[in-house]
Length: 68
Image 1 (cartoon, one colour):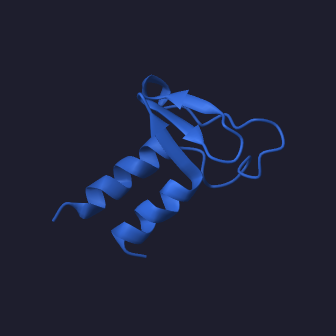
Image 2 (cartoon, one colour):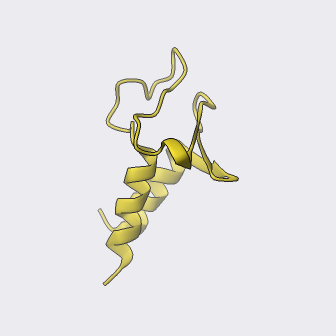
């Protein structure tokens, strides 16, 4: 998967507003200041217990993959 595809995939799950990442499915939020903690999805969200529990770290890794 290319960095652009990874970023598109990330954007399907998350959005960022004023330094807060928000799950597109359950609208749970996490400020960047808590980026070192697993994301706490709301009950019933399809992303609970998925591999997508560190959105800030995932985004950082994607960002680094764009650097040559």
